[in-house]
Figure (cartoon, rainbow, N blue to C red):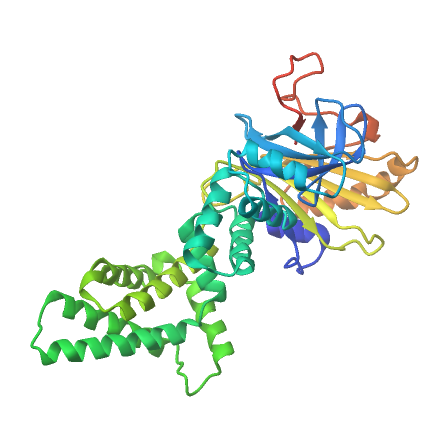
Length: 424
């Protein structure tokens, strides 16, 4: 079972398209606010707008706003290093400090870009800022369109590179692929005719004919043309086809390779063909990114689910930490899930599920005097539910939030301070 299926079953809904996610990666700078001191060790912190339960190793106060640098331990658990604290909504001072931390020039352009990234809650790093800045300068693209692509790459835990930004921009905001393919087919035909008139029988002409035939075959296989379908519906059809076309089908890959071969002889082709080829290749690269798995060893993800609990208007937050297994992003035989519910009557409820080899330990933390009795009434049904999902409940523990403690790998309070301020 995939993690998404398991979480869907927890909430008894298939409507998860509005779920927000945050992936923490080493080297990022994120914006945080201390929402609540849970006990002497743990705090509720908002990271880029997502609520997280974390262990603090330095004195903090409620309402404190800070920027944090994400670093990582060998076991993959992320740690946050406090960079600075600010008291007002005016970001001018922290932005100046961030520019120094990121070793970036303090100028109007960098300050404005950093302010926009912070406003959109995009995690910061020196390489990311420089890449976005370079992309805007070279392409003259609209910053809103560019940052939309950056947000998509960040949500998918993919690297923010020049090529990836161009690919997402072309895929989501470029002209529909039918128009691109049709234009390229016309341009190739014109070029083939000109070369045949001059008795050109070179390998380049053979490649031009192969690619032109590939385009015609592709459009024929989709049963579409400009005459029988509207542009918007057509764009959706082609994107759906290409998005779910897997490499093992050995169709898209070979077709893209032939397009890239044409780009390899760009000095022998007219500029108009090169320009059209580039837009198509980036569109195909963009759809590949949408189905691509990231290569990080660990998954540390924070999810925000909209109002799935009928008697609570607060979102539900889930922290997921796991090693990856095969081509899956989550190893469901060795994973920790931490749910944060906020109820009007019960208050904060933290549910920690530790899953290992189909065994599950459940720990609930809440300060309401009736929580133990409530858990007793639902424990049997919950155990039966999880048994149907293939899990055996090894124990259910109920504790107050003051008894919330870290896992064994967390150092005790007597451990020498090693520059780590918050552990998630």
